[in-house]
Image (cartoon, rainbow, N blue to C red; front, top):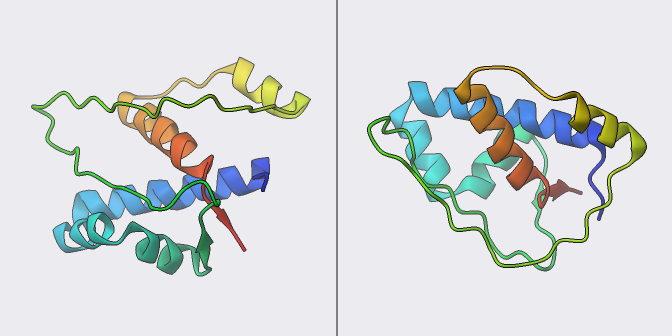
Length: 117
């Protein structure tokens, strides 16, 4: 299942909104950590379908600014082919603060594997 550029943009906006809610509301953040699929479905107002090669979504609280967090990525080769339009967007670059870049990286990683029915 291929995720369109428009879906990626929409998903990034939804994740950005969720992250902002997490920063403001500890209860919401706990819910997101406990059941991220449920929160994503509630925020998106539609069912989240994981690809057959993924079986869950893991969210960890990395909001302590006194800690450096490192994630060990899966050792897998992804066969990803970008369209000409996507290549132009990637090569143009993005300039913003560290939080914005963090959201973009996290969103890109998650949205690459999450689609909706």
